[in-house]
Image 1: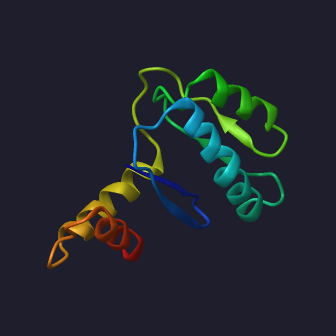
Image 2: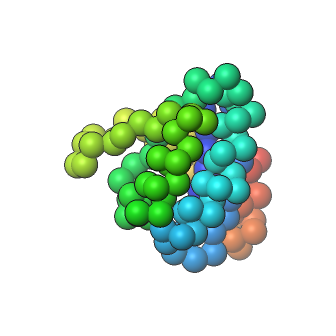
Length: 119
């Protein structure tokens, strides 16, 4: 699994996860990666974080962390069962298309991560 962060202003990085994402792991990602990305890209505090309602994203620990950091950046509340309008979906589709055209195709998880990062 790959976790990614992006904005209309800048592309972030890809983080390779070797296991299923849990609420605690997602909290660690928010703490270690999201906060610094938002501070760098939106140093004026105008950034707005958008996530979907995947179980780890909606976990109590992640929700609490986002509430505690609401003064650092805004959090866009995603209504349950709403249509997907996150730009990350378009970026993911473009990445998958680019990687799918590679010859030879990636054969290992490391090759796949490299191909995604190159794309």
